[in-house]
Length: 144
Image 1 (cartoon, rainbow, N blue to C red):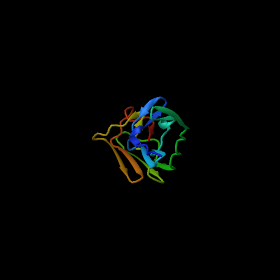
Image 2 (image 1 turned 60 degrees about the horizontal axis):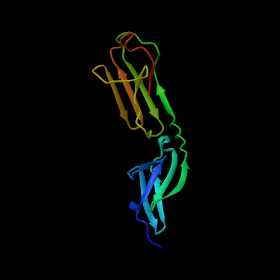
Image 3 (image 1 turned 45 degrees about the vertical axis):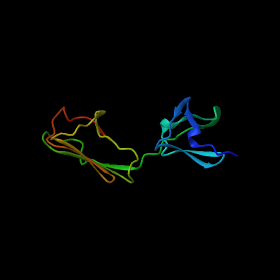
């Protein structure tokens, strides 16, 4: 059999062509086989996949991606009530490095670091420090 070059194989997801990348790779493994590899599949990779070889469309698979469970984490909060001008420090420790970077939120809005607020990420530990606490401005729910 004649070898099919990977550039003759076109991959489609939900009818849209998917170009090979670091995330999705096409590799010819034999004259009649091309391997499709999705690196670190995510929920947005779900869909109906087909391939077109020599202008012939072939159904490939329906991909369902289950989100990876979140790594267990412990959040340390020394107390829930603070006085004006005190410093709030929240430390969140994970068992393993999360695959996706996390963002600190205050009342569902991303926290912007400034002279009073710092966020750090070291290995598996996420820390936020809010100095010189201000009533109303700093009150609310902090999440990661």
